Length: 287
Length: 264
Ligand SMILES: Nc1ncnc2c1ncn2[C@@H]1O[C@H](COP(=O)(O)OP(=O)(O)OP(=O)(O)O)[C@@H](O)[C@H]1O
Ligand SMILES: [Mg+2]
Image 1 (cartoon, rainbow over the protein chains, first blue to last red):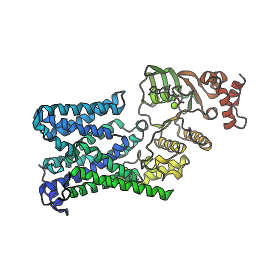
Image 2 (cartoon, rainbow over the protein chains, first blue to last red):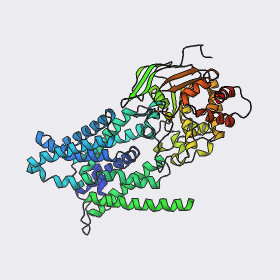
Image 3 (cartoon, rainbow over the protein chains, first blue to last red):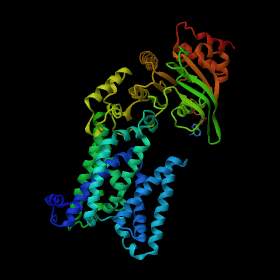
Image 4 (cartoon, rainbow over the protein chains, first blue to last red):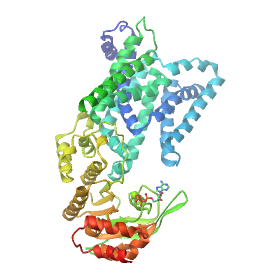
């Protein structure tokens, strides 16, 4: 395993009570890696109107873990792989089916949720973990998870460098993009795969119920703040990162004692409200 | 002009069926290389569908042969583009995303910005460079889309009603600009237009489409009363005549073809 102690040491320097504890350091590192990924991918999710897609992948987390436990596979491996498979199946079905895309997603969505519940209902030991999936628990991130996150982050950065312009092209009009020789299908599949993996990791952090929020809310706020597509990318990252760190800091305060995931999303929503005000003021001034 | 070498596109018995409906029926047509070929026909005639088949976007039976093979550089301007109006996405970015290697979140390179400005100059829309794509009017958007298509340095330019929504000045500008470019760069242009005045003036080849090909050839031969009547029905004659009053005020060589229809 790679030595991550330098990373945790760095995290321990963060001015917050309790940062001397390893689980807090791990939580902070995990959030600082996850937040920019969900934010930037969220921008593309908004462009592509793929919120429902990410919701479906998120909801497959439970089935992924359940199936992993049944087959005797480590859930930390079975869950992301299952999510990836679900994401690619949806993309594939959308491409080759005449049904509207939200219908396709709805069908897959129902199938994975039902599968997860079916397995769980037979097996009481997994049922206890249900709560963790609903609310998430960033404080239980293991060091191995963080290694995977680092690898995913590297792939993510590479992807954003290579694919950002092309995805923008494809989301403007896939027909124009294809006519102008952009390999649209390739980049859409890569995007869906990366998104599925990031969503699965976010489930650990904020829970199934709030995964989509991690993608959508920063992007929505960024849309109001930014004046260009490049600006929207950075604004989403700023909103997401600050919300993640603030959310973590607030949630561990004794007087708060709230779930970290929920607190992060609430801070994001404050950002969003601020962005609406900023936009209104800006439009007022222009008028 | 038409026969110096092999045609740029040959449609060979192209048929398209969608939800059990025959949209295109055994379309046989050819587009001469370097020509300005215009598809005309009433709404729902299958013009857009034929262009989409050409781009490989709809399934068809039959063959479509492209002169330069499938690796041909194509520029495409769609009939309409549904855009998210609130998206922060500038025209400069829109015209840089296809040429710039560096991701746009690292800013637009000087080179890409210069090229974007040159392209906008070309379509007489320089002032739009700072605007957001979502806030453009229909005609402004058409100009920007044309700029995007020209950026491909196309060998084949496919335009689906490029001047729909463009003002009178803009419509003429489009035609003249495209004619100049076509002559200097030698690309083939296939477009859909409802502006028969423009067709008579600028087209070198006309394909009359109404589920199947009614007629094709140079405008002077094709735009006859008989053909237009089959294509558009009786009432179209009036509109056509008005069109000519608008678009071709002084005695133009082709007014006769529509005049005939009027007397029919
Ligand atoms: N996806 C589709 N499914 C079923 N029918 C379709 C589809 N797209 C187009 N059609 C039908 O095909 C016919 C031709 O459509 P098309 O868009 O090619 O016409 P057009 O000649 O471009 O018309 P317009 O002048 O209005 O642009 C129409 O009757 C339309 O209803
Ligand atoms: Mg059309």
